[in-house]
Image (tube, rainbow, N blue to C red; front, side, top):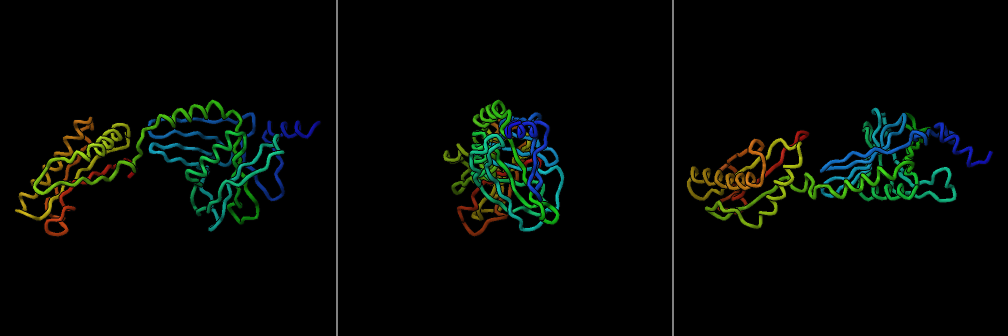
Length: 286
């Protein structure tokens, strides 16, 4: 029996010889596959690794992209331990050299090992070429054994296409792109500066697609010039200006929360920074 045939047979039954002092986690060929989950704010492409957990590529609205190795259960990871992510050839393409993608430091007690955009995109690129992104790190107990977690490109094509289509249709903004906006006003004025239209439009459009947004908090302020009662009413009218704009853009009235501070938090007399409205989005997980 040829060496290639032996390797293929071992992979089919989920057995592959590991070097001494090494534990190898991977999905046998007959079980290998990828799952795609789609949405307006994020898309994910994942593979289940038996006895280890899940490996997931995630594309987010706003352009963020990650690769996460999520352990099935918390492991007592030793402090200050380096992990290496590499692109390795599958057993039937051993004429190709492996290459390092990046390194990271594992955090004790964490169930997830996360790689940021550049490393994640590189890993997906290597996977698409037929390579096997592989995570290397020392074992969780005493670091005597080396751990390998390998993903395979087997049955990737259809799921990858769906993932790429989903990523291309994501909402243009992410949560951090629209959260915590400050809008300034002229003295004794409640008129909205047209330069803020785009910011408010983006906020409204995002709130309508993110079901996790529970509240849109609008806080109004005024400087301390003039009577205190006048400044309180002025801050309220400024909030109402923003509130009405968001309502006109289709934001649910039930999500809008108005707070008026008047001159209570004025920094100093007549400062332009005090004549403002702040907008904050509150999510379920916040």
